[in-house]
Amino acid sequence: MIKVRLWKIGAAALASSVLCAAQQAGLKTLDEQLAAAESAFQKLQPDLARAQAEWEKSGALSAPVDWTISRGLVLQRRLAANGRFNGKRAIDVDLENDQVRFGWNDKFTLAAWILPASPSGVIVTRAEDIGDLAGYGLYLRNGRVQVNLVKRWPNDALSVETEDPLGFNQWRHVMMTYDGSRTADGVKIYIDGMPQKLKVQMDNLHLSFETGEPVRIGGGGASESRFQGRMHDIQIFNIALAPSEAAVLATSTPIGEIAAKSPSSRTPAESSKLRLFFLEREAPENMRAAWLELRELREQKQRIKGKSSPFG
Image (cartoon, rainbow, N blue to C red; front, top):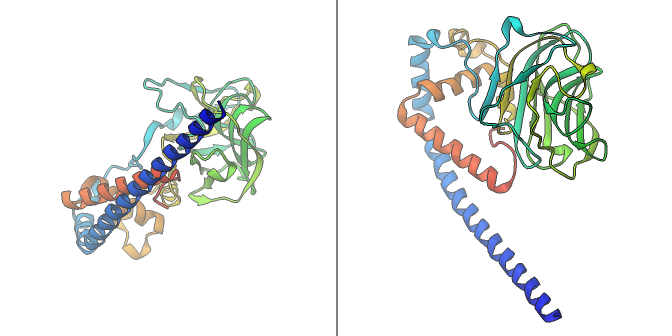
């Protein structure tokens, strides 16, 4: 019996070693493909800059004002005039394909424009509506932006919040990302596109926080925690967006207005937003294809390595 067990252990170790070797070989091949794609895209930069400059002179002013990053976007709600919350209201979002049923291994991003009238309130969640039970969410607590990933509070949960308070009665863009690492280090919070210093409240996640609850805007967690103020443009992505993309999401300047500015007067985030729009919508086909190939290879590498978005 002991020999059989030892044989099984040895076989398992051998299988693990073979799998690891295969992964390393695959990663090496991917690295070679990625290096080639990086080189090819770099060579296109002068032509890309000229093509974008010509487009800015001709057709950029007619670009849609509401463009946003589409990579990984699975849910968006632009609430406009209906985005007023009185501390009692919450919006349940119908989910046809359930693309936001995230668990502890999933990467995702939550983002919203908020104008809080109170220092505490729920921004967006997918969590049980009776306290700190299973689910995930983005919150405002005592003026600080907070992220909770909870299976069972407090013994099985992850919670972080910003060191500095947000302030209220002014529009702010808030965003969180989670990289699927099951640790507090895997959560980032951005305010107006800027990464924030975080305080770890809880780093004790053992089981998945996946839940079948609906997505709720302005609610989830407890009825007394409803949001007070205004919100618009709530977004959920099934990837962990990068810092550069956080800055683009927090840039509300329309594409046409950015293009009308001289390049030297644009902010870095405005320049990034304009370039991403051009690559996605207006660039010549060969340039767009090279960019898409490079982006896909970067994402493949990060999936293999189990890390967050490659676009930081």
